[in-house]
Amino acid sequence: MRLAALLLAACIALPAAAQVHKWIDDQGRVHYGDRPPAGKDVKTSELRGTVSVADGMTVVHEFLKGPPAKNRRAAAPMPNQGEVWIYTTPRCGYCRRAKEHMRLKGIPFLEKDIQDSPGYRDEFRALGGKGVPLTLAGSSKMAGYSEERYEQFLKAAGL
Image 1 (spheres, rainbow, N blue to C red):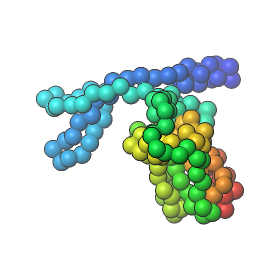
Image 2: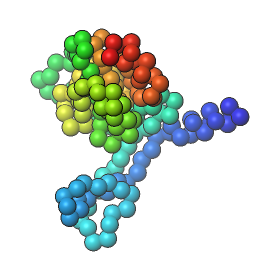
Image 3: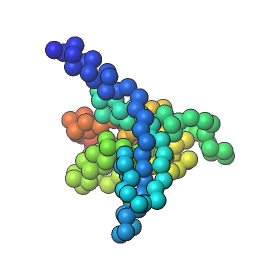
């Protein structure tokens, strides 16, 4: 039984690629989906990523390709004691869960979107990041998200 579950988890964690359509509705809200609505002008792009079910992390290979941004120092930054930073991407479900966890606990955090910011992407690389969310609290670092592990991480960080 455990072997079957392990094999299933390994298959699920294989790289995934899908067409994703983006559109804006009449109220100005942005939507994403595998099928665009009829009669709408949509932007289509390739969504790539590997979801690792074992550690609650979305691997972000597409954002790690290429050299660091020009004129940026690739030093690994760390937040001050009591500060929390979360490196994320917009489509990461684990990132949403981690941020919601922090909000429910009343813990302020700085979100660093590695998709939209070359500077944050460089910091993420310098920290050895392979997937999001990557959470830093003081001198502690945690990759991925699970409620139990996150609670332990926050407690150990004094939050």
